[in-house]
Image 1: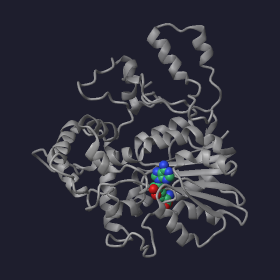
Image 2 (image 1 turned 45 degrees about the vertical axis):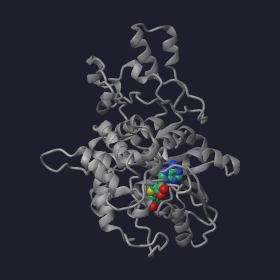
Image 3 (image 1 turned 90 degrees about the vertical axis):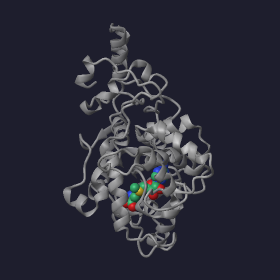
Image 4 (image 1 turned 30 degrees about the vertical axis):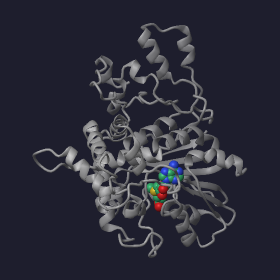
Length: 418
Ligand SMILES: C[S@@+](CC[C@H](N)C(=O)[O-])C[C@H]1O[C@@H](n2cnc3c(N)ncnc32)[C@H](O)[C@@H]1O
């Protein structure tokens, strides 16, 4: 628990606004999203006019923290590796370059385009197997196909540059496109359906929980008022509603008013945090002992999930990971924690919560103001199934950020399966 939190009483949530969970976006996340959109659109190799399946020789996505990820993976020439997020294939190609003829790479994406693109650059490489799959289902997939455990698994979270730069995908508030935002275009749902059918309080809750949008209620009200007159036509019209809802006199805001709303919708539409939680809860069973997991995240609330999982701590939303900068987590009242979704523990079974962490027991003891013998026994938790390769997350170098500004918020965490 952070120092400040020990003496501070839990703050009361404002009426009508959900309590903070500590997994919210930080200003850095939002600023990065804005810069990312602007720079990708300006620099995209694929060009905005390019038809969806005209590759023009490139996918437009520069791999992030590539050197560091390859150092962590220590690819064995005859090993079996999984790239959970194929995208433009930057990490996948680097793995293939290190594999010998006996090696194999399973590369996944929810979006069919990266798989098609891999057909172009992979050129029939027999070592490369691609699958359209949510990485949340990796454990099941490996088991069903008897593929065995991997020597290394990499996940580079979020969306790829091509998705953002393709207006028809609806990810960008800077391009006119349909309200879509699905990674998998064949999945039911999409932002249009959500925006037009969700009750106003649900929309407000999504804007707040997934985007930390302070004006979530007002924004939801304006969206509902507008949709009552007829369908909202597309991304630019939705962005204009955010501009209207969030307009304030004074200097221009640092980020586009639609930034938080678009991010919240994308995360919700794709169930991104849920997928990450399920993946982290089951991925240990997908690796051989000594195998390496490497995860690159771009948002602090994702990195926090990865950090806690690789510490081997059973994780529940609102739990304290002991970082000073996460003090707000520990300001949650016990009732604020209760009922929040938990995550699979160390067993690899997503249904079963793993052993309680030390901190759970300390929290309990502190709440009761007594420490009982069973609490002391309970804190003897089994050793972590992970051995982190570095104590802290790895960040991109200044040179990488200068070459690829999208990399600036990237964080790599890697650990060896024990
Ligand atoms: C940041 S990009 C990966 C870029 C890639 N590493 C490269 O260097 O080109 C993330 C990719 O993961 C995919 N994706 C996101 N969530 C996913 C999930 N839960 N399961 C599988 N793929 C996912 C997105 O469609 C996107 O193509």
